[in-house]
Image (cartoon, rainbow, N blue to C red; front, side, top):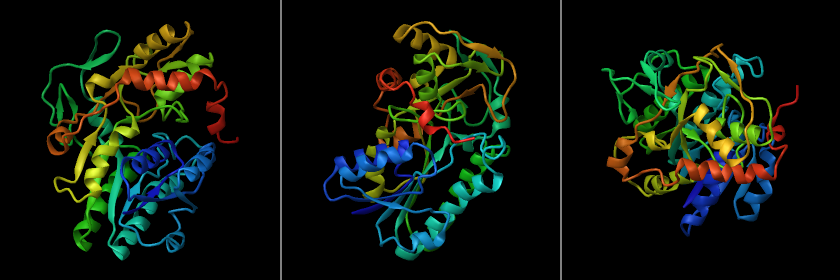
Length: 353
């Protein structure tokens, strides 16, 4: 089976490439990456040594895809994943849409031409910011928790696929939501299989974290090497909560999807409530693992920040017999071990000013 994996040199892409290749004989992976993110080139020799064929091309350019051979599946892990992309002055709004939507369109045209299946690694940020910020929360054990309330798609297990996806989402979230819809339309119109895997916060060793993406890696590396940190927004105490998922935990469901499974095409995959944590709780973990470090306080809320976002994976459990296999404690320790010997890791992914 031949698979084209976009974003292959990124954290999620490289992790999936290595674990997917090791999971079953007979899989050939062609990795595609434009290497636009600083630090991504570090994964090139590692993947090449594993036997993954890497192509340096840009999915935003339709002509680049013309150089690819026919394949059975595309797994799309390419994205500009920053929630602030297009509004923070570091990338234009046009670039964000080109990265996260135009690239998808070109990949879908490839699938149409070659009758390939399509798997989109989507995001929890397709859920409505307005609806998320409207959830009533209370502080329990240094973390926000939803209070009892009747909201469609919200339960004690988290946010389900029934939760609102109405704007505002962010430019990143809107482009991913549009990609989801286009993928489903292409699959229906041209008769090829499509799966939409909405992922929670992906995390693990080797991730280049920033304050607006890869927050677990960013926080642990910064804490370990005593870099400046701040609790931003809301009550300024770091009570906001996200869940955590290691990309390798997606391998069992990806194998089922490429092997011809059937079912509802859109599904949440995340760590869930058991693998969620607030920034304050993460700081406490870091203090125990390293040593105490001062964290500042800033009440100013950034655009598109939400106090609590944990995905409900009940659908994935029922349809795919899936659950996250890596606990949040294991993910954090994996990042911490990686951080112990890499004082300049975060700087490797910093774009030049």
